[in-house]
Amino acid sequence: MGYLFRIDDEYHVGLPFLTLGGAARSTDRYQNLYRAAKAEIDDIVDQTG
Image 1 (cartoon, rainbow, N blue to C red):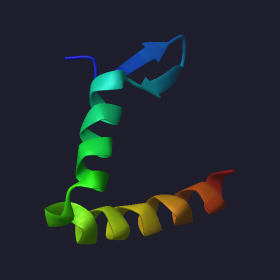
Image 2: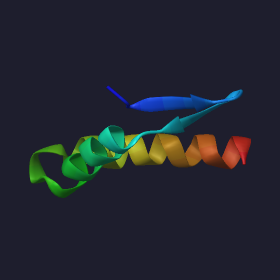
Image 3: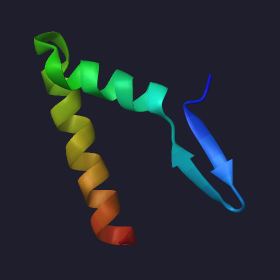
């Protein structure tokens, strides 16, 4: 489906995943989920650089 793809030893986010994330972000129904996930991802980014 192309949600993630691998180049050598690294994984990258594919366009279908970004499309779903954008839809979730812009839909009122999913705003709470988006905020919760964003907070968790921001923490992971802070920890891993």
